[in-house]
Length: 179
Image 1 (cartoon, rainbow, N blue to C red):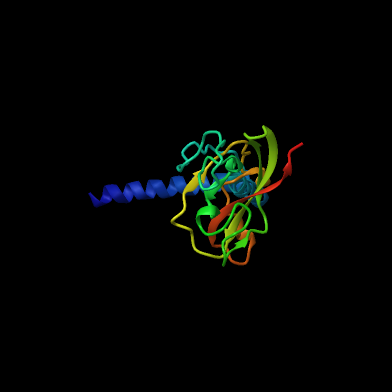
Image 2 (tube, rainbow, N blue to C red):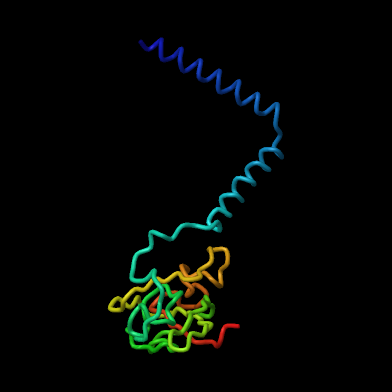
């Protein structure tokens, strides 16, 4: 029985050697490096492709038309993805004490049901404190663009641009009328 395995291993060894020599004769190092580079670059660009967010959990997904800033359906939260700072000791436009606004943000255009006008809203993550666990998580994706349109994408921890990267909650700052 040992002779059978030795024969199979010798045959496998010859096949591997023959294959390796054939590849070495038909392609050079530059060709290999070019193909390897393409494979690595392709792998690096894959996360930038659009993706399906239909599996997201949390309150939201409909149209934000409410009037209570303590609830997810408040009209300014039409593109919000995060916890409400209004429930964490902050306000619509101010981070809670001990946290700071992210230096970068995403934007959305939300319709105010009271005057039926569209407003530009800047969503800033508040950073520097631990996650505000007692607040409601809201997830509205109205008008959201894929991940490669960074300023219009809400699934990113925007605190990564700050010194303290811990996410706490999100504010919805009214910037002005959308034109």
